Image (cartoon, rainbow, N blue to C red):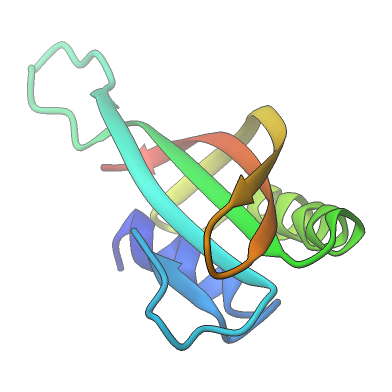
Length: 120
């Protein structure tokens, strides 16, 4: 299993509306979107390390700020508890609350950043 798959499985315990990159047009809120932003290999004396740090951004969208904040708290809890053969540790690094206004609807967004260490 990859880090992305591990994150997706953990997030899917909270909602069925979990998507990599972007949501489809027919999603329901709350919706959770995750992206792997970067990968930094760990230093290895053999220069053949399969481990490293992966930076993930996870966004939660809902019609209300309280709904987005509640789901974000659940996301933080479930992601920080990931520990398996692929992901050895998780660090929560940042959060920002935002308002996304579009012509169709207004959604509140909570953007969270995590650093995962494991097999990259």
